[in-house]
Length: 112
Length: 107
Image (cartoon, rainbow over all chains, first blue to last red; front, side):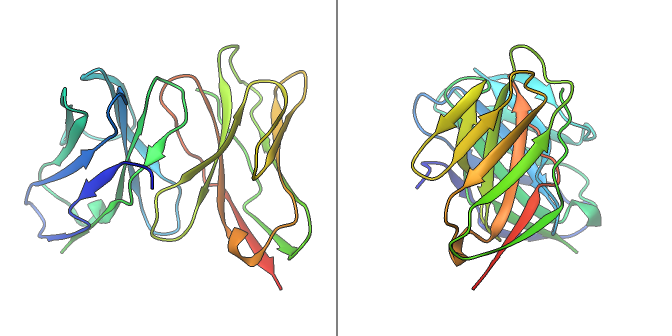
């Protein structure tokens, strides 16, 4: 049990729609990172938030955006969904930058 | 950000010791080395983290030479349940995964 909860566990959307994925971290975990993992590949870093500010971003377009809230929850928003956005989306938190990450079980997003 | 290189796959048998080496030639002074394990349809799970020399916990050991340009994850006496993908990460801020090493443990 990592203490990181993601919702929903599965989601089906159609191309062009928008989606919001949610993550709840442990109290005191000041960083949250989001990853996209396609089948058979390693998790790809989307972005990281530290104390509610974006701290780093991977090679993802601006239609991927996020928020981190003071209550240790966070959101990943994806606009104008494309078929290639179909993947497992993982949220991970840590107490401080660079420390071990605690992952949720992910949200499986299917874009049709 | 330091790039990591690992073998794509490894096979082993139950009861053997498995060593997975990761290369990270441009590791920065402040970077730590962290290893994660991932099973299908689950998020990665932290195994071990180190900065230099040797670190050991209840599931693995991590060996880091003096130049820190590589590291070796050692799994003692693997079992079938250790079949998973293992990732080596290097960094001090955001953590970026490579392709990982797919370990298959055979009976």
